[in-house]
Length: 184
Image (cartoon, rainbow, N blue to C red; front, side, top):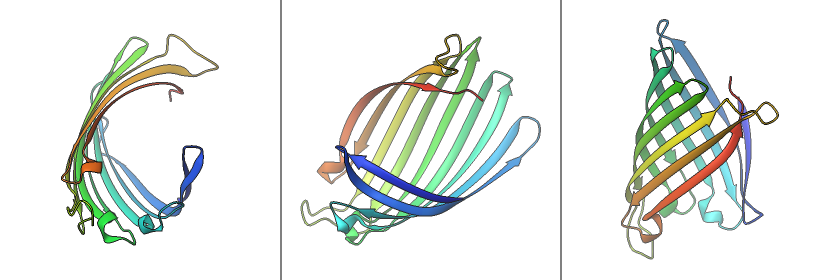
């Protein structure tokens, strides 16, 4: 699949990108499947050309239905982010676990991810290289009891903690999201 993307920050273009992705989905019987995604993207940043580069990401996911209403997903990913300025270039490894359960017309889910990021070179200030651990946890609920133009409401609570020797990559945040989605 050919891809194009445009991201804005503060109502101004932040970066533009183009690339391609490849996806394979294979059934492992009536209750399991495995999926492989490989994506390559070239990005050009508006405000900082030092971030320009090519990113490669590979994901593998295993889904298993434990019952008709209870599904578990385990996955792993590896990425390489190139950049003109070597301090912004990195490689990463991550793993995630998602559980989803239907309760009548509601679906609840929980997700936990752990990611490791290694920078290729140190920054000038601070004179440290990225060597990060990032933990991300999320709880969500969607309800098919209420429909808005055929869409179901959903709510998510997400907590992220990043430990990094580079102070602008060390943070924690809590997000609450509300949205509408279509069930398949």
